[in-house]
Every structure is written in C-alpha cells, then in structure tokens.
Image (tube, rainbow, N blue to C red; front, side):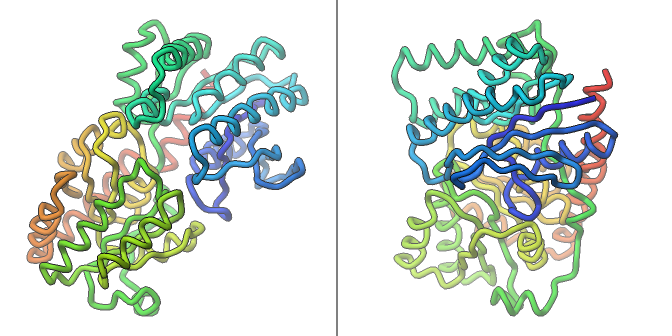
Length: 391
C-alpha cells in the first residue's frame, strides 16, 4: 500500500528526540509498503530526503519547544495549510496516518480526505484540548467549547483511532463510543537499549564514579514540573546520600533550571545538553534509576512518555511522581516506585531502601527489562501497527 504519514514533529535517530513516528514508518517500509512523511524544519526552504526507504518532506515552518502558546498555534496553522497543499502530490495513496499532537493535525487529515479521497487513521498521543485546558493555557469558555467540538469532529471522521495508552483509549471511547479505538503504546527498542555494566570511561565523563545515578532524560518543558526533580536532589544532598542526579535534555525551562541549580548549590546534580540516540544510550549506561516527572495535573497521567519505554528496555529502576496507568504498571511488575509529587523526602526514604537492598535493586532492573521484552518491544508493537493496514 501507499501510506501518507502526517507528523509535524517527525524525528530521526540521528536528530534525537521522540522517534516513534520513525519507528512506525520504518515498520511499514520493512513490510513492503510505500511511505511518504510530511513534516517541518526550521530552515527557510522546502526539503526532501530519502531516509532508509522513507520519503520525507520537510516544510519550512518554524517550531521550537520554547515557543509560547500562540506562537505554537501559528506554527500548527501553517503546517495545516502546507501539508494539505503538499498532499496533492500523493493523490493515489491508499491511507493517511495523522499523528497528533497537535489536535489540529486532524483538520489537515479531514481536508486531505475530502479533497483527495484518502481515508485517514488518527493517532492520539496526548489528550487535546484537555491538556492545555488543565494546564491553564486555554481559559476562554467559547474557545474550550470550540476545541472540544473539533476533537469529537475529528474522531468521528477517522477510519479508526490509535491511542498511545489505555487511559487515552478509555477517554476516547467515552466520547465516541461508536468509533474503533486501538491501543498501541510507545515502543521499547530492546535491540538498541540493553542492560549493560557501567563503563568506567563514561562514569569518568559524567563524574559519577561510585554513585547511584538517577537520570531524567527528555523534554524540559513546563508540563514536566522539573523543579520537583531538583528538590529531590536537594533533599538527597541534605541527607548525604551517595546519589547523583543527571538532567539531560532541552526545552523552555532549561535556563530556569540551570539558575535554580546554582541558587540551591546542588553539587549532586549535573545538567547535560540534548543528546541524539547514541548520547542517550551513554547516559543510560551510567544510570541506575530513570526519573519520569510531571506537574500534578490529572491529564498528564494519561500519556505514554518515550523515556519510560527507553528506561524499561535498558533495564532501569523506574521512579515516577504521578499516578495513572504507568503507576499501576510499575507496581504490578515490581520494576519501580511512585513518590508523592509534593514530598521530596518521600524520594529520599524510598531510594534509601533501594540503596540498602542490592538484591531488590537488581530484581527491579530485571523486571523492567522483562516488561519491555514481553509487552512493549518495538518488534511486537510494530507488527500490531502494520496489521492495522492489512485489516
């Protein structure tokens, strides 16, 4: 089949960041399908490239995690018009696969369906508009009504919907019970990320020799609530724990977090620049526990963060400060623990238990890897994704 993939934030292993859409496109190509991707880049000219059989088209639409709400919205609007126009090159394609965020990608998919007669499947990675509404970015009553209406309008016009978590699936099924919703979460690349012995050279590079290392790897955005991560580092330093914290990534809160680290005199925390996939694997090598952090906002508990699945594949202890389906998962499979989102001392108490019990620590790491292999491996979920089109 010929499949058009719409994803404004398409990333590659070389560029780093969330590469789910690359995994999906690669799975389709490896299964014999023809795939074209419409994405964006921050350059001034349109560009096209072939990436391992994936035909990628980059529209010149600027976007940055540091953009404020309205700047982001304008970027989303420009992508809608650009992708609809460019889709005219793919009139003979069989399906369109539209990946949100943002929700507005559905407008492009609907227009492509009506203009070029290409049916679309709609992927929901975060619940929009619920997320920006609960985060306080959208307060106008009429705008809320409009966005909720748009959400349902898109859902009803999709051939089927792919949700990235059981919680998202449940939410969508309540809104459009007549629609078909399939859960395909983010993937654990169990071939690329593996449990490894710590390399002495990397311990020296990151100055963590002899330390228990807790890492946060990912977006440094407002939603991630990373002031709490720094507070956990502060509480650990006061308790004189042999724990070192690594904060790795980029985003709107980077400068704020850097200033806060200096103000709090956190000698047990290092900030590492954004890394490509090879760089992330290096950080994972010296990591014992992977910290996944969000602000205490209910809708953020429904997501499917890439960093969770990477950490499972690498066999790391999972530490989270939010509830929801991921808390249930790590507690049922004994591969991590939950800490109260407003109590850094809760982290200190629970990590202290792990530090004292090496057997339990190793069991938790093995449980993470086993969960990745049995339930979330890239191979298993890629097969489930490709099967959508054969149906």
